[in-house]
Image (cartoon, rainbow, N blue to C red):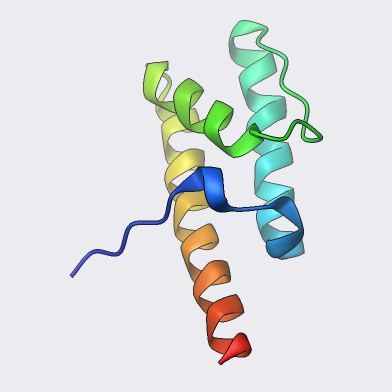
Length: 84
């Protein structure tokens, strides 16, 4: 069974340092790829990253986004489990 998490509902403060590092890597890679500049401080940064990843034809960016999504899922599940 696949579990879906809405990126709009996730705050950066909920994420572990590994996820934040992956976000930064994606932002840098995107800028190098096509010049698109995103800022990690933006409220909807995860949604912006998702939109950019869906638009790109770059395999490396797609791979980075897939890894980021997996890590976010693990992080959010760990956060929920800790709150129980």
